[in-house]
Image (cartoon, rainbow, N blue to C red; front, side):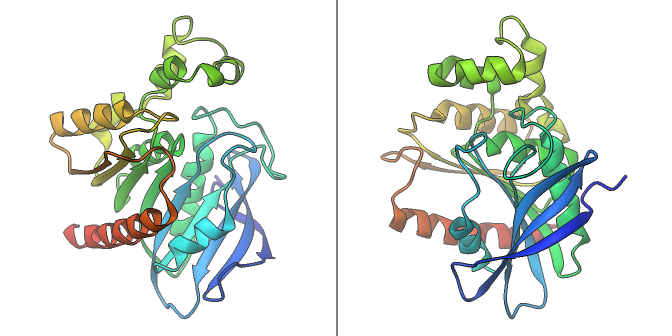
Length: 262
């Protein structure tokens, strides 16, 4: 298997002089998929940071400034675009087979000589991808889900504006194909998760309701897993810039404190 193998590297303009950016083409399930790699300059060894974006297609695209922001915290960050996006082969399918793009990206980070531990971060629908990756790779040092989806059927019921897309991509409704939604819902496999989990969520989130966070927290606590929750009573899906920066700093510290437990 060539999953995670890098087949092309192109320099990418960096918004930060302390961070080097490269667009990577890598193999995932036989497909050539693209993603963005950010490396802090002047660091010999760093923890890896797998950034799993939200949205689908052009909604929620990987933003170079966001990736660089995490790299300035001392991580080597890789953010897959997912299959079918920005010149990559295949078709994105919202937590179905495109989870392999996250798994292969984990292997890609693992293959980099400068990378030590690997942390997994998911935003919005990337929350599902992060949890599925943590289940697949018990050696992940930590998992962070920020405004993250944990139950795909709940997303279908809550987001009337996404139903058409979800029916097209997943093949039908949760009532017609419960197993397809079940398969995209990591709550059912949390027993296999070994890494500590940090849940970050705004209580007023209309894109991904805080109920996703509560369901995940309840499930992890019931299984006696390591979980920490940062709930923000006044915030929505998108945090104001100053709060966002502070949360990024805090979660970076939290991540770095996790590998000491292993």
